[in-house]
Image 1 (spheres, helix red, strand yellow):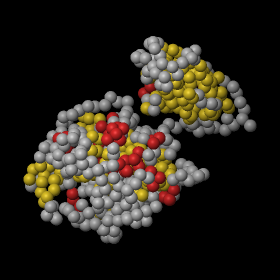
Image 2 (cartoon, helix red, strand yellow):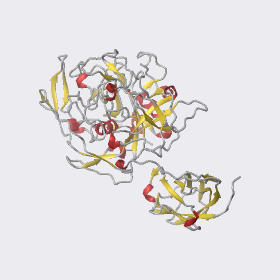
Image 3 (cartoon, one colour):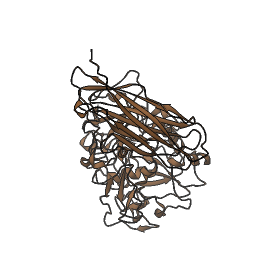
Image 4 (cartoon, helix red, strand yellow):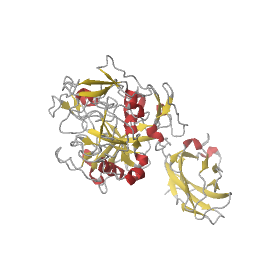
Amino acid sequence: MKKRNLYVLVLILVLTVGYAAVSTTLYQQFKVLLAESEDFKIIFSDSIVNGARKKETINENEDTIVFSTENLGTTDDVNTLDYEVANMSRNYDAEVSVSCSTTNADVVFLYQPEVNTVIAGESQKGRVELKVTKNQDIVKNDDITCMMNVRKVSRNELGNEYIPEYKDSTLNGADPVLDNDKLIPVKLASDGTVTVASTKEEWYNYENKEWANAVILKDIPSKTYSVGETILESDIESYFVWIPRYRYQIFDEGNYTEAIEGIPTESNAKEIKIEFESLDTPPSNGSIKDSWLTHPAFTNFNVNGLWVGKFETGYEGATSKTEAQVNEIASNKVIVKPNTYSWRGATVSNMFKTAYNYERKMDSHMMKNTEWGAVAYLSHSKYGINTEVNINNNSDYLTGYSAVEGTDQISYPGTYGTDETVTLPYNTETGYKASTTGNITGIYDMSGGSWEYVAGYMPSPNDKSGFTTEELTNYSKYLDVYPSDSSIFTYNKRILGDAIGEMGPFYDYADKDGSRRLHNSWYNDISHFLSTSGSYFLRGGPCDHGGIAGQFSFLQYTGDVYGNLDSFRLVLAV
């Protein structure tokens, strides 16, 4: 039985609640009433304000949190502080409880944590959540005090050392967010074996082109995995890869309004300069060549990064490419896995609603055009493969495959098929070349596989996506909208960062099949902008497109089923 010595620490959270138009501050102070020689120290190890991580609000001594709250002026306004308390001791556990009080009858506490035991060397999360129950007609501040009592409990044996969460210094604070318990951090062996990663140890390294991976498991009662355990492939529902928030140096303003007749004599491809930054860094707003722009894929959702589907979305249960051709809304059929039949043949509306309803708590949605651009640009930086990724030329539309070296992938059509002399899976030396990193940690199917519809469109009377006008308005946050007067040559109507206009100049010439197409000057990928006859973007190209497919290719169509060649990709904005 443990020997219990009772010592009390007092943590005073003085909440200055702002009403109406005032900007206010929440002060949280940690006062330790024991001598340091007692080997008992508790620190704040994390701070999340209204859903946004704000670690910079923790002071240098890690005993105080200071931040500005949002205004509380209207009935049902809510402000939330989620904090993490870490026990730095090895000799003592800590029993922690919080009680809050206020003299303002118009403010209620929606959540107060009960007693939690913070084991030596470990951490626990807590929350203070406030709600206004009545409109505030005058400008005022009220103090609300929360007391945290900490009971110091002696241990019979030495506890663990406190080890902070692993952070990659290269990311400058844009590390993976795993706030939802469904996302499990994993490490992938070169053969594809998946093990649960410890977040206390290095599990990603972007300087070494090793991107962070996570999985969502199938809903199997009583099925759990511990750190270091191998996860059965049959238990995995979806793979995701972390794209950290970054700014990039604009290399081309993309102001092109025509295509040059003839074949370009040299490639315009170059390493894209990227600097990672956290959500709390003021965004860069450059718009001209050589200036810096925080990529709009991150500012749109105001996030520290995005979890992107590692593969094209598959259809659960399909045993052939034909069975995966389904035009319906069915979030329960979503899988994101290798060696899976890509879900093809749906309208943009059905794809969008399937992705949107997949994991609402993690803000799941269909990949936007700018989000495609964010992945493509990172792939072509020093943190990625820094060249064009190999095409997935598997004609069964199986995810994660790569063209075998020596097959014709120079023009259109290229060599495609299912035989291993033509195409190989993601977990082979050949397969790695189809990844955005050149290794197994990257994102696949960005060249070939299927055409991928992205959530990027222009208003058009020929819109056949299945969306109503009202839906396009309601879902506007999840759609990149281009000008309604766009046409096939108006590359200047691009959104900087979408990997469209910036891939110029553009060229008009005939491919091997004799048909004339528009191509960019990076890798000669097909490059057709939106028009009234084709108002939705497709990206990547299908399995047979050879040299005109790639992570920088784009085409336009009506939003309707595109010959059962159209698929889509999932993104989580946590």
